[in-house]
Length: 332
Image 1 (cartoon, rainbow, N blue to C red):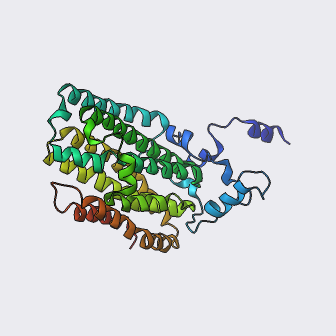
Image 2: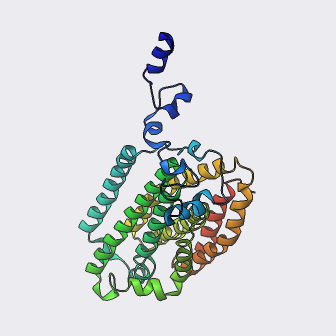
Image 3: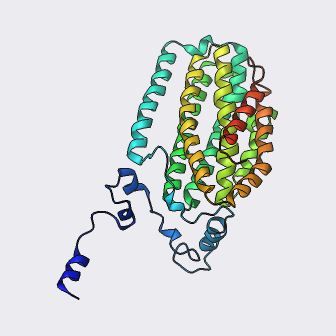
């Protein structure tokens, strides 16, 4: 080897090899988020162990073998370019806001001023939602594990964190309401309501079926295009509207805060669908999944909203909003 070639080959890299082609200074997002899944390097043996191990067979079937395919999943980018550092900064501010609401309304003895009819509604339709939110967290965590690119996994893990956040706030409000109105069954009746009350059976069926969808692509479509939008529109938007009617300003403001998380989740969802549609065959794959799952989402909204007081037309609005979200993805 000539001295010139030797010097060229030993010249230190200015950045990671997979970022060199950009020919510009990589962003923090590019450095800490892209091309991190080594398990995608060898399709026939994702975890670089015995090919016959169950974990390898699982990923070959449910990730590499998914009908949802792309030649370069690693090229996907989160439109918000969130990383762990910026996510924590963002949500620290949101948590300070919600905690401030909780403290302020507790000082005013807010729960003592709520109407009996509304308290009964909260017992039936709000506090049992921690079961639903936990299911959303688990489904999001499954996407973290199974997504074919680290940039997709990152979006999913932040979504899982969002779900845990609202699960925690719901549990906190459950205890506050139980302290204020122990006779209404708060903190005791939620599991029975979740398992037996007609209002919850549509969502319960939908989440139980969603949690046993193992193909990563279908799991993404079910969760982010059907289940999560249905929860956002029913539990957060329509419940928040009804809360305003019954002067439960605390819940109304908390629901508005939750919808800020939902807006961000919809941005990365839309970006991933748009990215997937670069491959022509994926359009029909997604449409077929939506045809199978959308009716369950609409039924869940209908059953839950039927028990929501103070806001006639809640089910129609929620169903229309979820349909508008999917329509905006340009799938048809």
